Length: 377
Image (cartoon, rainbow, N blue to C red):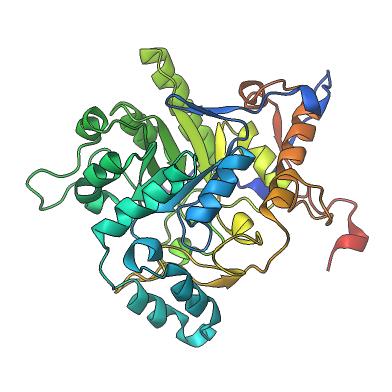
């Protein structure tokens, strides 16, 4: 007799294991619509910059918004702990590898200054840009009123894993439905990777959800905790929750794939998996204008007891405009990401992101190596 199973597992898929199938009709890439909407805001390009200190400061946020995207400022990072944040970022980029984790723990032990929370938001607003800012769930009650008063346009509540139902010793913890009622800005919540968790968060009234646990280039959550779901499967499951919630209420919640995207090909597969937008960290940290100076680190890296990230040297590959809009000077797919998206949509016959979400995908674990003998190391 076969032995009974203690539990069943399903196969899940990452970007490297799938491929997009071209459509029966093709479209001129310049004629596709890639707009991204969250709340009352619509952006010409569906790209968000991660709320990570190496990727976003106030200047970078303004620049990305002028190019059509949205950067999320970390309200619990270096920008709100130090008046001269740029000098601290330069130190982080230069410290030796074997000293970087304790150094980051020291840097992030400095208290967050409420006046800097207000000032950083106002800096972005004064420049005429849309301001998105991020806090962790445990600090949301403290900083949400300050962010709202300072004029934040989009409010992000984010941690490694966020759920609608959290058990703690707090008498009255963070309740997203209550937060949605008092915040004047649309709220994006993350991160999650499952259908049920996403659906529960959507039912709280949020405007967008961040998908991804552990796929980031600077994140070691999967190694340290063993927690995570590959991004294609995670995005598909959360997109299914979006469709279910839309059917229930008629309200559309944006699904944003966060992490694991290295090239234009990964980005295109994220949309075909069901994403409305993508959030990028290490890719944008390679921009000349990024504050990390060619370095990138996860925001869980400076945890005082259990760091779950590492500083990586991503280098500088070009300007932000070149990375997003081209022209590309490399052949590996790390520049002109929007050009890649438009071209893939044209090949697949998708006139909009919604149509791109319906493009056929196939399992193709050899898609990047088949016939590539001369390109392989």
